[in-house]
Amino acid sequence: MTNEQERHLSRILRSFVFKADEKSRKGQEEHGGDLWALSAIDLVNHALEEAIDQVVYLDTLRENLINEQQAKVIK
Image (tube, rainbow, N blue to C red; front, side, top):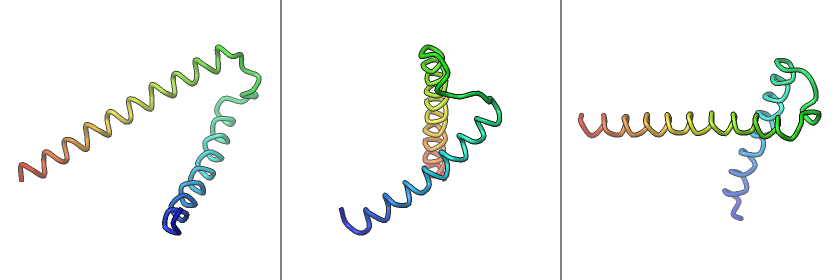
């Protein structure tokens, strides 16, 4: 990898570690318990809920970007 690619990856990894730590602590505070103690079906159900949220956020972002792009063309 180039130096620029290495720096980019390093920024992404630092950001991920910070965000994962923050989200895990917030989730622990809100929900308590041990994540590894959940049943397989509960883990799958929670993961599916998260995946659905992600699709909704990404589709909304996509719509917003399209609308912004169209607004620029109209101007």
